[in-house]
Image 1 (cartoon, chains in turn green, red):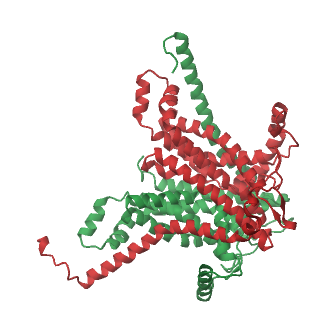
Image 2 (image 1 turned 180 degrees about the vertical axis):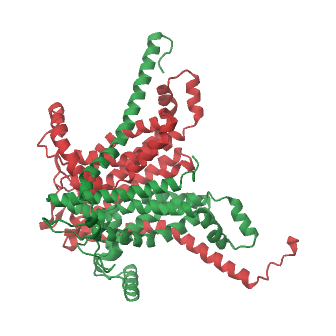
Image 3 (image 1 turned 45 degrees about the vertical axis):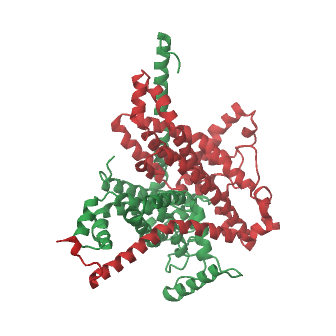
Length: 311
Length: 322
C-alpha cells in the first residue's frame, strides 16, 4: 500500500476512487446494453411480420406471402412435452433423494456432477440422442448394443416408437437430457426449505415416510418445483443445436411423433442463413415470438417466486 | 404409552405395506439421483462408440493434423480446435473484465434499490437463446463491425499479423465478440456470488484503516476472492468452448487455419452443427463423433476445474448459480 500521509497522495487516492467507480458503472452499462439492443431489433425487424397467419399457417415458399410458423410453434410444444416426460420425473425424484435421503457426501458428489453436466455443450446431447434413437444399428454386437436393440424392438411394438430416423422422440430426448440436472438442482433447493417440523408431524401421526414426502413435502414445495420446471422448459425451448440432427425440422404439420418435426429455433436458423429477404423477415418474427415466450415465462416465474427465497 | 412394550417383530399388514412403499419410493428417488452419473457414462460411452472407426483410422494424429478433405477421407481436427480456442480466448478477454467490474458494482457500489433490478436484467440476458444472438449477429453486428469497427482496428493495429488481411465481417473476432456477450451473464452472476461470499469483516477492517472504496475493493475484496473469480472465468471458458448456433452463424465456416482474426474459421461445435446432416459415409459420421468427444472432454475437464475453484470459496447457499 502506498504511504497515506501527504495531501497530494490523498487527492490522488480520491481521484482514483472516483475513476474506478465510474469504470464499474461503465462495465455494468456495457453488460446490460446487449439486452436493450436485442429487444430493440427484435421489435423493429420482427413486429411487422407477426400476424394471425404467422401463428396458424405453414411456411410459404419464397415469393409467396402469408407464410407462417404454425407447425414450428406446435412442434416446439410437442418437443417440450416430450422433454418434460423425460426430464421432470427423473429430475424431481433425484431432487427428492438429495433433500430427503442422501448423506452430505453423496449429495455433494451428485450436485457437483449435475453442475458439470449443465456445462456440457447442448450439441453433444444432440449427438447422444442421435446415436440412441436416430442412427440405424451398426454391424457388430456387444451385450449393451444387443440389449438396447431389444429394448427398441419392444418399444416399437408396444407404443410405436420409431426404430430409426429423425423424429420428435429423438429431439425430445435430447432436450429431456438437458432438463434433468436443471430440475434436480431446483427441486432440491425448494424441498430443503420445507420446515423439518412438517415432516416430523406427519411421521408422528404414523404416515410412512414416502407418504410424508408425497402428501406433505411435495405439495408444500409445489410452487417452487413448478417454477424450476418452467425455467428449465424456458431454457431448452430456445435450443437449436440438439435438434439439428434429431428433430431435424419439417415444412409440414407433424402428425406422428415418430417423424421429423419443426421447431421455432430451427426454423429461425434455417431462415436466417437463407439468402431471401422474405425468409429473413420470418426469422425475425419467429425470434420475436420465441423471445416473448421465454421472457414471459421468466417474468411470471419471478413474480410467482418473489419472496419465496429470502435474500 | 410405554416405548419398551412396543412389540418389534409383529408387524401389521399395514406396516408391512408402508415399509414396502418406503422401499420402492426410496429406490425410485435413488435411481433419479444416480441418473446424473448414468447420463455422464452414457454420453462418454456413446461418443467413444461412435468415434471408434475414426480413432482406429487416424489415431492421435487426428488431433494435430490440419487437413480436412472429406472427398478423399482425410480428416484432421486442428483447425477446429484452433478456432474453438481462439474464439474462446477473445470472448474471455472481453467478458471477464466487464463481468468482474459489473460484479463489483453490484455487490459494493450500486445503490441498494438498483441492485435487484440489475440482477434481474442480467438473468434475462442469460435467457436469450443462442440462435437469436446469431440472427442479431448476422444482420446487425456483422455489418456494423465490417463497416465501422474493423477498418479502424486495421488502421491502428494493422502492423500486428492478427489484424491483417481482407475484412469480411464474419470470422474469428466476430464469433469471439458474440460469445463474449453470451457468457457475460453467467460469469457476472458467478463473480457476484463469489464477491458476496467475502466476509464483511474484511471490508470493515479495510475501511477502519482509512481506505477508500476502491482500495477496500482491491485490498480486502479482490485479493480475498481471487481464486473464486478465476473459477468464474474458467466456468465462462467452458461455456465459450461449447457455444454452437451463434458461432456457426457468424464464424464463416472455413476449414483452414488463418492467422488473421478477421478471417473466417470454424469451431468444434460449429463444424458438427454444419456437417452432421450432410455426412453420408460411416467414416464422416464417426469423425464428427470424435470431434464431439474432443469437445466433451475439454468442457468436462474445464468444468470440473471451475466447480472446484468456485466451491472452494463460495458457501453452499451461493453455489446454485453455477
